[in-house]
Amino acid sequence: MFINTNMGDDDGAASKLFNTKVLLGLVAGAGFSYGLYKLIFSGGNRGKKREFRPGGDAAWNISRQPGSLLERVSGLPLVHEKSDLTANGSTTDELLSKSPNSLEPHPLEMLLSLLQTHPDPSARIQVLVTLGNSAAFSVNQDYIRKIGGLQIIGNLLSEPAFDVRVQALNALNNLSMNATNQEQLKVYVRQVLGMIETSHLNSDLQLAGLRMLTNMSATNNYQYMMKSSITLFLSLLVVGNLTLQIQVLKILVNLSANPDMVEDILQSQAPVSLVLLFDSCTNTEVLLRVLTFVANLKDWTTSTNITEILKHSKDSLYSVLYGDSSELHQKLSLLLSHPDGEVKSQVAKIMT
Image (cartoon, rainbow, N blue to C red; front, side, top):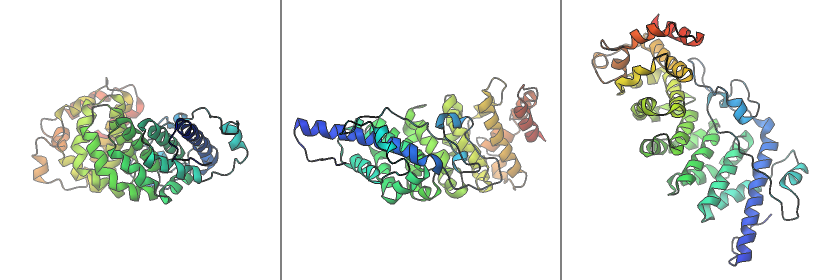
């Protein structure tokens, strides 16, 4: 298949658009058929409780390998659009059925080329969605990295078009499920943190950025890059909607599982209203995660020498949770009668 990017008349434009649509359908379908059995990702570090994706199997509709990095992180559901007709009148599905055991790399290269050259934001969005879907599979994650795709997609984080930036983050989210890719993607962590801080509350951009950072925080390797944003996470936890709260808590639970991060977490400025989450009226999924977060901190705190500065810092998370005026203990006592058994178990763990 060849896309002639030099056409200038109406027929050329129509042909280029047609070929682009065919290419999008080809890679989306091929990524699914070839990558389905290739879902093997590197494992993270073991020990403290980390975040997983409860209920994520239905969204992905794929089999995950136990103990994999994918099992630790959150992602986006795959999008499978209807196949377009190819130039010879065959559907994309028919074309793929002729070679079900191979995915040609050429379409991925062409898609990345389109990202760099196509002037239409809507076309770039479609390309990013297709690349993001294909990046759900490890074989494509590796290949996209090897042909320079991580930087090409990462450059679009500075794109003026809002939806292009959202889809670029969605694609990077899937690509960051690969441990080798994370080594290259770490250069975008602080940029993504800035995007989260400056974007509208509960926006798609904010959520997409948090999803990517959940992947990047699944191991201890790059958590240090998020130290200065712990206060941001705690603030979003208080003011965000349910979806945002859950995504923020996935990151906080991952960070709290690392003993090297605990002191930074406890020193971070935190809103006093954080303790209001420890209530039977709080969504159970949110409540379980915030209890896990505090339980992780408690385990490390008991074996850490808390400095006098930390004890007397009135606006720190340590003060909000464990200070003399904290209402946490009283609220935890009330949660011992919560109807959910796991909630009661986590509360008992914190209080003992």
